Every structure is written in C-alpha cells, then in structure tokens.
Length: 216
Ligand code: GRF
Image (cartoon, rainbow, N blue to C red; front, top):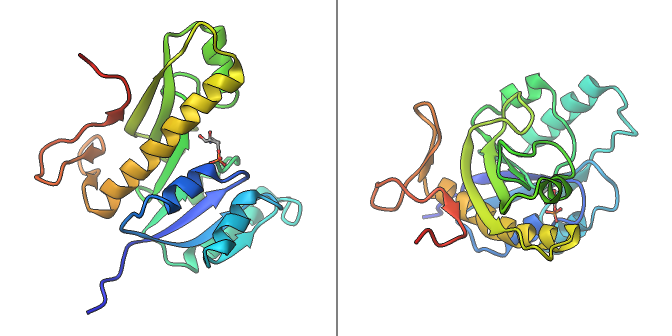
C-alpha cells in the first residue's frame, strides 16, 4: 500500500537555507514544488538538484500586483498542496491570496514576534538593546507578520554581537524551528481549532511551542 505524504509547496526569494534545512530534515512530507519570485535564487538550484519541480515567477513579468498574485495562486494550486510554506519569501501577498490559503500557509520571520515586524530585524534588535532575540513560525493572515504564532526559537543577544553575528545565530535557530513545526504539522500534531494554533506531543498533551534557552 502506498502511503501518500502531505504535499507542501515552498516559496523562496533567495539563498534557500531554510529550504535546505527542511529538505535535510527527513520530514514525513513531500515538497512538491519550489517557487521563487527572484531569478537566480540559489534555492532553486538546490531544489532542482533534488528533482523537485521549480518555477520562477518574476514581478518584472507581471508588474500588476493582482495579476502577479493570480498567477502565483494558479501556479501553487497546480501542485495541490496541503500546506504552503514561506521560507524567506520576500514579497507581500494580497489579502485575497492569503485568504485562499487560510490556515494552510506558514511563514518564518526572523524576530520574536510581535517585536520587530518587517525588515532589518537584527539591526533593530541590536539598536533596542534587547537581551534575547529569535525567530517565529506563524500562520499567515492579512496582517503583515501578525498571524497566530505557532512556535518561537529564542537566542541570546551577546554584548559583542554585530548584525551579521546575530543574524547567523538566529538563522541557525530558524533551521531547527521550521523543521520542528513542519514535522508536527505533517504528523497531525499542529492544529488550529480554537483561538490559537496548538502543538501537541505524540501522546496528545500540549507540546513545547519554543526552542532555545533552558528555562531553569
Ligand atoms: C530568513 O532569515 C527568513 O526568516 C527571512 O528571510 C531569510 C531567508 O533565508 N524571512 P533563506 O533564504 O532561507 O536562507
């Protein structure tokens, strides 16, 4: 009997290190397509090397935002995904597109939301002299970086950090957090029935929603 794994489409814009972490984590899911909005994204090459269908949808070709989003939606739906994963997809999606994937679209953001929505999160964390920083996986809603939080990864901010060092520490955490959440999702342990998403352990009890510092 063939067991069909849940289908995931991943959207990227560049480097694709989160995509690499997802593909390398041996998750019980199938990445059925990788779509980039930027040409030459190294992540596309990575996916091609693994035999995953890739597509490029450049905004240069579809300057009208609604037109772009219609194409993107058609392209994604061609692959009949159960989940759409934004792994460094640096483009704001229209409300209608987001609504189309309601509860079926996850994003990773490089800050501990709701702090530092938007861009330049590491610089802003340093400027704000915060003691901890990190990353967040959340469901995508119409509010930019404002959808329900699924899980967070916490890292310390060291006095000696510059932006690059802090970014690297957060990125390493992203590479742990996203696969953890996707494994839970693929195993049916991530649900969102009430007000908030819930991560459960295999025995059904509420699971940890964060990675990082030892709380003791
Ligand atoms: C990550 O820091 C992600 O959180 C942000 O963009 C970056 C993408 O990196 N949204 P990569 O392409 O996965 O290496």
